[in-house]
Image 1 (cartoon, one colour):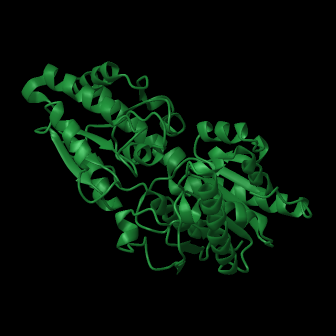
Image 2 (cartoon, rainbow, N blue to C red):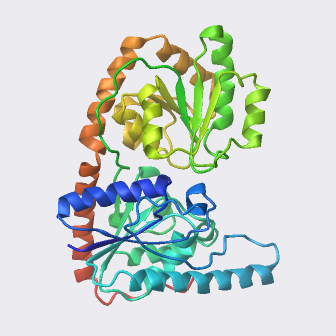
Image 3 (tube, helix red, strand yellow):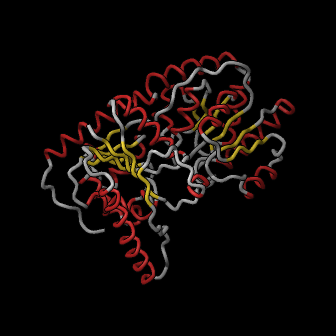
Length: 392
């Protein structure tokens, strides 16, 4: 089976997913999995500095035009038309760089690998079976829900959580096309030695649905209860090379400057070092996706406190220490409880590691993905001549 991935290939969370999957697929298939990528226009530090997962990638550069919904109907229509032209050209390039593939697997994120590009990619002819992993929905498809029917021309769709599957079905996507496959994680040696502090993953942008304000309110309560024994809170993510000014101000307003350590953008090996030393991971997300930090936590023996959102139930299973959304008091109580119960932390660490090996290792995820590819190939054979979707 010849496989080509169409994906973000920068050294960020999406690139980590694609690279981890590629390596595992290569182990299973016994041959090289190709990668086609382009500049995405997300302004992530890894993109700005052209930091790739590695150089084994068929990379090209084309202009990007970010989504912006003008209040002027004329400007909105013009911008929409220009985006359509730009991203159709990109979709054609993706297809031309992947001739000979049996399966093309498109990782949908934003801009260069966003919905408008995907839409055109699905509408253009190809002999390959086409699989789509939907990492996130972009504003275009949310504003124009009828366009989401184009997913039904894919041969298989992969999501990481029931939450995303539900959203897609509401938008008119066939449920029988969708497979739920978790975010994978590399399984290294289980860290040993003393641990201290709390880890928080801020995602691609430290705003909106990451529960950051809830976390800080909870930590203010924890500090008041524990005093000098308050743990350090380490904050990291892909939101920039320096802590955002608004976030530093929020920390200062709650009197937490002395307990917060900003680690900002981290490469995977450095992130793993942080997990190897942490007592807890806290992810009070109300949206987005937290499968990456959840998997890293389980693989490295770190108990996780979080909401039942953002893919956490699928990744943590029965091991999640659950809180309600926006519940700072509940989060503070869970933090204090687990910090004061080393035996429970040890139990969760052992069970989490076992779950990571059994459910989340890249080899397990690759096996599930190959089954999805096989279903896509069957669907491709059975659906020749399927009518195209309506215009975007």
